[in-house]
Length: 263
Image 1 (tube, rainbow, N blue to C red):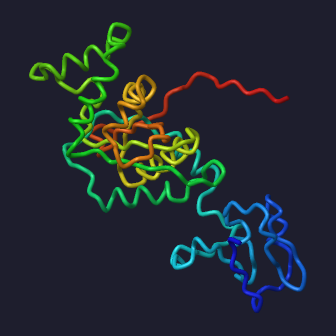
Image 2: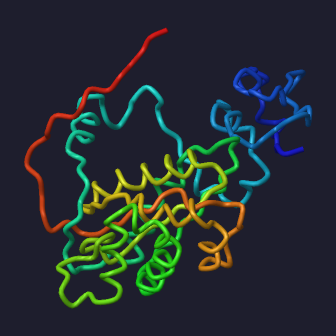
């Protein structure tokens, strides 16, 4: 059994049963758990009007429980859309680095991110002091494709002699990197996207690197040698260079039309 149901508080309203997608709750005089298939999504806990249900895994974390009015969203459609319009990739950064407290504020966005099967298996790595070592490790893996991609060749040339280069071919002027690992790619992408959007509210910016992700695609086992504490079944699914923007953009630009089919 994974739920704690307070029989004194339960009013047997049936709302918990109605939102349980695993048929794990039935109603008699009070709600009770069948023990069949709970995957700890927390829907029953979040909807109970009398606060009678608590997941056992959340015991001791009551400070994370927060009531809100579902009919009063803190942002409307137009504000959120305008925010999304103003998001652009940032590659020119100030020399100022992001401190640990600010990073912790960013990860609050990922903390509340959904994940496949509610596994919540996303892990983050913030590379700062070991960033150069990691990038050399990445090059050792992706250099097999430098004949196909000139940017990878530029990266190798930069590592051999960066005295004549204005910026890093993969990091540009970035000094800090967030890597996202998970067994499910979608979970990682959603989590990092939420983190990224939250970053813009704090005056930060960044961009995603597909070349860094190539290291996982080409040789996952060798890549994970750099991260011995992370489960080898998890893949690096997002690489986000982040920092304080040096350049600020003033207007939107058109995008290619997206294709939508209603069937």
